[in-house]
Length: 388
Image (cartoon, rainbow, N blue to C red; front, side, top):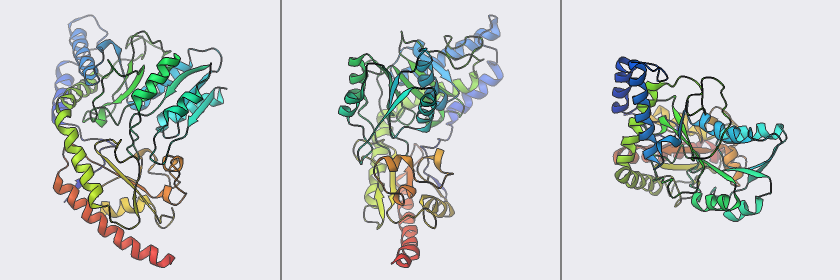
């Protein structure tokens, strides 16, 4: 038996998206910037995908800028705003951002920008009062992640966005983990910039999008032919974007049924693992991504025992989970997310993430919980008793 429980890292490309990509590769392969029939056929496919992605977040089609993925979308949001200014200004992020936001912020600091990194509570949530207090006269951008990929916590985006809008400051959110899993309505949500990724919603890898509220100006990262409303030059990867579009459309259709189903699976897993010694749930258990469960090992030391130890043991049993964020799983160092939430160095190296998706069943969750209990029992006897 093999069970994939790492849907936060990537999702399997759904058959409908594959069929769409194959059709475009054989019939719609023209350059969408060309004026002839072949180009216009491709341009029509591109604009159809733009409408499909926009509908997922209830936004106008013209607000969607296609990118190569969520990382580029985040970089375009951060650097696209920053490059509007001749002199360094001030931006605000949280201490639990994905590296695709925190690293551009660090780069801006080397350019003389002031970056405020808001602290979070033990559940990983930003206090809106802290955001209000951090605002300065020269604050030009706030970027707060929608749903944290490592611990699953969902931020109070509406309240944070209202604070930003009242202050006249642009507000960006990385919604890569939330889109397609939680309803997002940008007609009502006070957000100016929002990042999306195709491969998190059963579309192909290599495509993403940045929602840019109409009227917002960005300086593009790439100079060239001026594609994507002059925001992202380069011939669009139409087959991949088409797959992204159909995945977005189907995710929107399935969300009313799939989200409560995932919540039930998630809560079942937390319940079954509630009595496991040394396994501590992380993140906010209520304000949480519906598909996401995460824990840390109370007695991890980062050397003989870490989150990676659990991942390897589960993999031997045919179950795929993650050691915290997949982007950091190759590093044996304390998780910056868990550290920001107040976990000590050992526990912060013992994070694991179990994330479910459209192919996950109740039987999968039951089996994974049983195996993880067995793994934890063996590890406890090997490490904890020795330590005592």
